[in-house]
Image 1 (cartoon, one colour):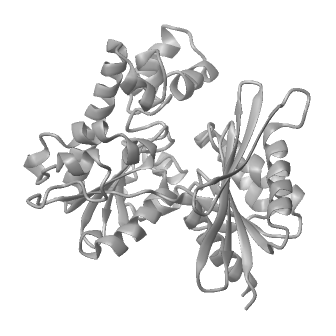
Image 2 (cartoon, rainbow, N blue to C red; image 1 turned 60 degrees about the horizontal axis):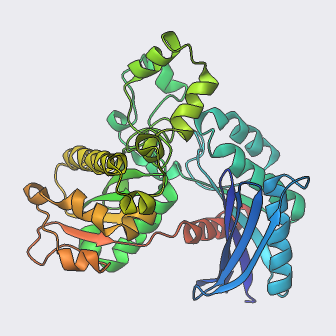
Length: 398
């Protein structure tokens, strides 16, 4: 069988991550990846080969030009045509943050699917519009190949009722007001990777901490999601780069009644001006906060760590015990000080940290005496999107 190629897209408000994969029908291999991002009035483009070496960079102003996502997609496709003219791209896969009640598996995008995705924008206003924009841009550029939507919420549809429901009248649950959970593509990849690395632990009770600009935690039993720190939207649970995390709903009533804030102002506060950035008043970037000598930076990190420890305890209770912990995401994979502070004093659940292994970025950072094994695994959402895209397109042909 001749080789085929798949492109994946992970679109945010001001960035699109992309990757090009090749498959011969059995194995899938990454050929290249890249990022187009918008910083202020400047747009930047960077690509890397399969070994991670930088192969292309470009910068330009976006003033007076195309909307960001259309511009980015055109440049990505031009790059692909120049750098890999022989690539036989047969499908494109897209990360879509929210799939609602209906979408529990990847789906080939149709006009009807797009209409339903638009109806989910209120549930993920920071992400869904940009996921849709990337799909539309790719459809316009590649009208003859299927576009596949891969949902971050799908992995969590195995939750039991008690971990899906809020204490509201049942009618709200039936119409879709429930705990969805997010970062599912990351958790799915980590679950599969852990099964390769440590199959005994993967088959047991594991808590995965996806820590980055967006942050959440997931309890898994035998690789299936049991509970998640995120809920109806991607605001709940841990504090994030600019998102608040867990919040007493009474605060929202206070903001509306006493501060006279409307829904748009509250959304901007909770999504864009809170979290590490809001608490520190300095930055949403953990690297900058760790380098700062300001007390506000230290306090923001302390709260971030406290909330991780708090969620860890709750997820261990949901699992009725624990066999393994996994850190992933930009902070989880690289911020060894955060990992150390999370795990210090956790002997009561069976964790003993190997401080040297942790500092050196080893894959296993628990000591040999630790009853609970602790891993650091680099996540790869793009691989999951590519695999799902191939499977969905094959299924659509049958």
